[in-house]
Image 1 (cartoon, one colour):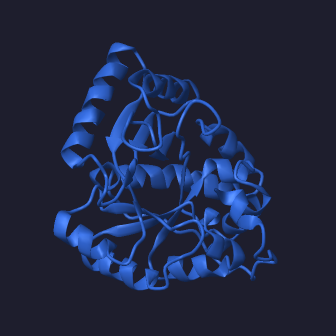
Image 2: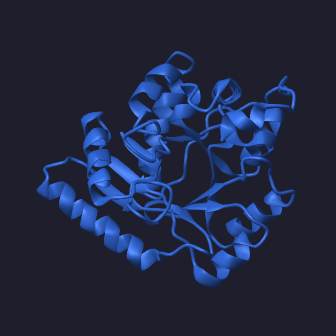
Length: 258
């Protein structure tokens, strides 16, 4: 099992604070059957780390894992927040991609989706990147209008589901939206988005079993596509469909997704 989205490196974002916390995360993940993790700390112009530091930390914790006999391998990555200057920033400075592939993980602000997101993704594709939307089921605009994800996928953008979403960890509306995306084959990847060994821990094995009750085919595709990301190969798209508009009303659901 490969976890493509996890906050595991200490002291650089809202993930673990201490080295020992990271070691515990790696142990827990390995014991649950996860063999590889792509470390995806939040990254923006205000980040206190760069790609060189990230790779140094990845190598350090891979060595620690070997010494501790933890059967797991870390790969570098990052989670970028969508903003109107993202394509320019990446064009100027380069990007930290998932496992040194061409896949770029990008999250929307939870409360709204920038109106020019399609254009920004288009520009990123022109730069040679393959954008992946992180946890689209947690974005308020997509909860209200899940059919918008169809438009992204149909334009060549990929989507990554959070394991906790299908388990209801972010509220009932996020869970329902995750179910809609799964049933319509609009998500191609899954990740834990773990931040600790506590509330936001390694939930991928439990989530996979839950998703199998909805679609065994998509769980197989999740597994195969994770390998394709690591190998920098083209992802497989299942027969995706446009969902009907959400029945959710606007009030109150933003609190569920934060």
